[in-house]
Image (cartoon, rainbow, N blue to C red; front, side, top):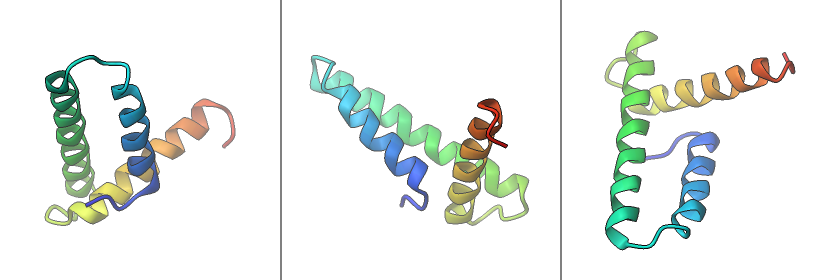
Amino acid sequence: MFQSEPEIFQLFFCFYQFSKWQTREEVDAKLQNIMVNICKNAASAAKEYGMEDNLAAGANIAGFLKVANAMMAHGVV
């Protein structure tokens, strides 16, 4: 399902953050929210760039844009 390294990193980081929460239900709810947002971002990026039915391409585009925007915000580009 995950096609880009930023998404995988985000998921691992979230698992680390989950260790700070107390209940399984809280962890499940937050993970569900993260997964829904990843899918929405992938679908939105795919649609915006003319690949509406391609979630893999959308995930790659969304991941690239996230990294590119972060680099610009830090003055790297």
